[in-house]
Structure formats: structure tokens, C-alpha cells
Length: 344
Image (tube, rainbow, N blue to C red; front, side, top):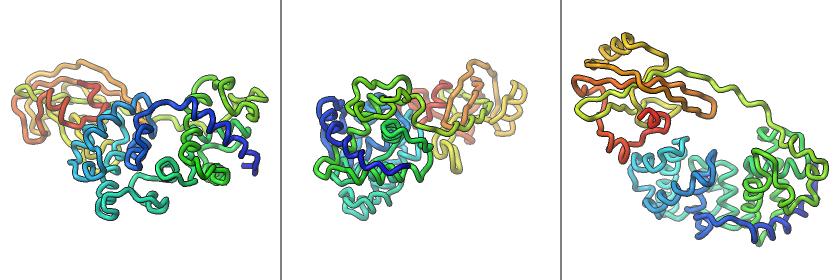
């Protein structure tokens, strides 16, 4: 990344634009560290429009850090259901417990303390420090990297950690100390609303188009530079909805990794026919009355794709191998990942 001290020119136009065009979002109404933290964690890998109802429900259930620290993990996960990346929810609870134990329930104010909390990296620590505490720390995510790459026509791969650190350092040299919160949010907002990731950027609406090199050279489509994405691994799964006396069988996934600790329907990582399913169930101590193949479902994770063939199986008894819940309980009380909820 080249040294470019002229980036200081972006500060005033961005602040003026943000003052006029900023969206009204619930976490911007009352800017407190706790509220900023929850919103930033939810917004990772998730669109603003999708986050808003989750955020409002979450804050209603846990209006203060202590409420989150004292909550049962299952309730936290249920409110998170559908957002994905469930480790984020677990880390929120862990951090809330640490804040209550170590900081007497007050969110820490120092960047070096914030970044030590579970689930908080450089981006989130920078966002909280600048937005909530008015400190000159940049929050460099994909939106910000795209804006800077296009303004300067930078050829570095935005996935490169060294490049991210260089952008962060360069931005922090031009931070307006009395408007850190607004400057951080203006960069985010510009990337989300004008210098957009998919489709043609709205360059005529951009407050920085007078100095943007890709606007001058009509080269926006070449930036930012990204390495080719890793091809998703595909897995064929057989998913079983076991019914008995009006209840459905689920189990908690053991171990670590994807969806660990969450409820799931019994499933196998291969395609199976009726006879193979019956043998598999017999080995689990489940006596099958009848089986019906009824649905195919696809679910895409970041680097993984599940092709699920779902079977409805009527069972003679609700064996102790699984936990059994009514459809209403599954809907209202049990945290069931979206991938499996599709099977219902």
C-alpha cells in the first residue's frame, strides 16, 4: 500500500454527508457501549435489514449487561436462532460474565481491555472504541476496505491481514479527534449505501467522487482486489424427523465445530435408502412403524453446502436416545439452527 497523506481530504466531506444521509438505526438512537457491541457482533456477516428485528428482541430480553450475563445460554441461543455463527452468541454471554466479574458490570473503556474479551477482534474493538467512547481507532471491515481501495486504486488483496493493518494505521492518522464516532460510522455507511459491494456503485451520490481515482478512470469494477473464493464442500445428508405421540426427536450436537452444542434432528452425512435408514434406527434402539421421504432441502454455510434429504419416520416409542418435543416447543423454546428448521 502506498503512502498517501492526501487521504485527509476525505474527512470533512464524509462528516457532512453522514450528518445529512445517515440511516436511522436502533443502535444509533442511544449510543452506549453495550448497545454498540451487540449491534456490531450481530452485523458481522449479516445485513442491516435482517439484524434490526433480532437486535430489538435481544435488547428487550437483555437490556443491561448483567441481564445477559445471568441469562441461560439456551435462551440466548434461541433469541439468536436464524442469525447463524452461533459462537458469536456464546461469546457475547462469556464476555458479559467477564465484564460483570472484572469490571463491575461496566463496559471497559480501554481498547487493550476491549480486545481481550471473547469474540472481539480488531474491527469490533475499533468500532466500540470510536463509536461509543470517541477514541481515534478505525474499524476496518469489507465496506471500509472497498471504499479505500477504490479511492486510491489499490491493488492489494483485501483479504491480506498486512493490508488491513496498513489501512487501519493510515486511517487512524487522519481521525478527527472530536468526531471519531461519526467518522467511523460515515466510512461504514458509505460502503454500505453508496460504494456498494454488489452492483454498480452510486458514484454520482458519493461525497468523495471529486478525488476518487476509480471514478476518474471508470475502473471501479476492478477494485477491491480479492483472491478467488474457496469452492464450497458439498455434503449429502439424510435427516430424520422421528415422530412419536405428537412429539419430534432432537439431540444436542456434541463436540466442537459447526453447530456444536445446538439441537439437531438425527442425521447422517451420507444419502441412505429406506432399508439403510431402518437398520441405522434399529442400531439406535428405535423401532420404526413407517417411513416417508418427503422433502429435499439445501443449506449453504460459508465454506460448506448441505444437500439434505428429509424423511418423516413414525416410531413406536420415544426412546431415551433422544429428547422429544412438540412442534410448539421446537418453535418457541428450543434453539434449532436454520439448516434443520428448514426440514420442518
